[in-house]
Each structure stands twice: as C-alpha cells, then as structure tokens.
Length: 106
Image (cartoon, rainbow, N blue to C red; front, side, top):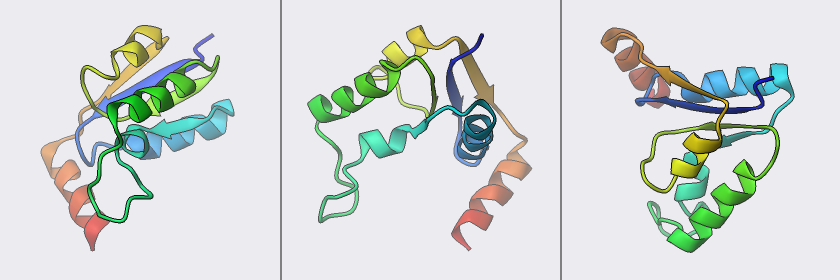
C-alpha cells in the first residue's frame, strides 16, 4: 500500500490541489513544504524558519506512517524523497500553468 507520497512540480502545477484530493481520499495528513520553510508567525513577510526548526518540522511529518508532502525544495527534503513510497512529478503545459498563476493572484 502506498502511504507516503511526495508531490513535486513548479508553481501552478497543481501540487496543493492534488495533495488535498489525495489527503481526502486516503484520509492522510497533507503538508505543504512552504509551511515548514517559512516562519508564518514572523512579524515580517518572507522570514525563513531556522534550519533546525524547519528540519524538526519535516522530521515530525515524515516520521508518521501516513503522509502526503507537497513542494519543491532540495537538500533539506532529501529524507522525504527517500522515505516516500511514491513521488509524483506534475508538469502541466506552460499555458495551463501560467493561467493558474494569474488566476491565483486575481
């Protein structure tokens, strides 16, 4: 059984949407890597979490037996790739991707 999934793809590729769909169907927790990488409670926009905090957050997520991780970062998420039963790479057409990005910000 597939119980650990990592979804990758560029902006507008549908990572978050697919993670949500799979999480609902599989009853699995979904994790957006942006929520681990960025310090959401910081007073200034664009503040990164410290590597120690970020790594601990990821370790907690992938330490579970069932998870879906979505996002594209390198190096610090290598454990997620190693532990994943399935890695899904999304690559929509450039027109669809651009339309999604524009729609997101309108």
